[in-house]
Length: 235
Image (cartoon, rainbow, N blue to C red; front, side, top):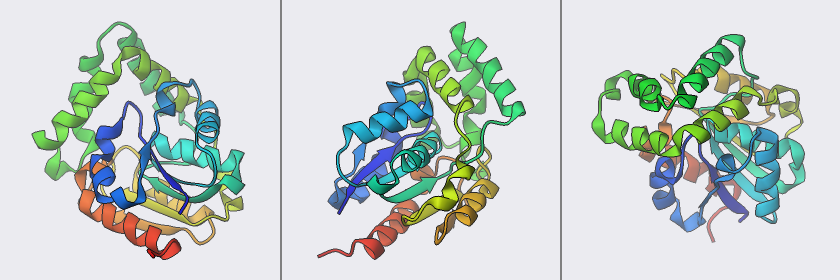
């Protein structure tokens, strides 16, 4: 079995993968932190490949999915499979760039909570947007990232490459998952990725927003496990 690497989203850490670290423990997953140590998506992907030898299964959520797709572009022979969760292959839109630049200005002024707290609910399904069991851990790790990381990671996302150009060349097994009510990377983005990658499987997670690994962990784990076992059956 190739090494399973979990790639967090922007400002994320192992907290967002807690249910997968437990539920997929027999696959010995490792959470990468290249997104906190490098300034661009291509550099993050390059570091990931340098730090983990051999063939890899990359499971990336949101920004982590962008890094995973870029790693597959840089070293297609090293990537045994991709799981892309709640992400997009598109470059930054002008509207989103403007919003991120405005947020970056506030982060630079130390006004992190002013930006993050009112928007936390958008990461989850409307039915759970006020659930403290979800909101507080999410808010905690975003605030823990701090201003410098929020600025650097948002700039990396702004400058991300257009992955749509190389996705049709991928030949590795690819699973694309998205919450059916994802407000940050709507399901059309996942449908587009699945349509571009030959043989890709698409799973829309019901009653779920952007943070699907936290919001519907049992469904996410079941889909990941079934997909992994189809390609690497247990002994």
